[in-house]
Length: 92
Ligand code: SF4
Image (cartoon, rainbow, N blue to C red):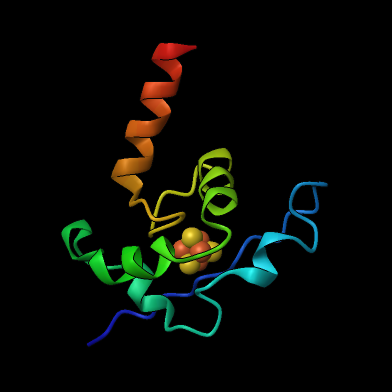
């Protein structure tokens, strides 16, 4: 049985996010299951889509700020995002 995954693009209303990057997300209309692989090692398809997304950086920063725990955002898996957060903390 396929686990249903609901991916809701962020609805924040801060100046950086209003009407901006979400409307240009390359993943719009694409099956959200792709962005929630069962195993993080199976994230290649999502990462390939993100790699050509014009709002990859904004998406990644959103996911880091929102502490998104699941899925591929901005081309990174949750494990990879946690690494970025740790790296940023060390260099702060
Ligand atoms: S970077 Fe990836 S997850 Fe984020 S908006 Fe673009 S395609 Fe979607």
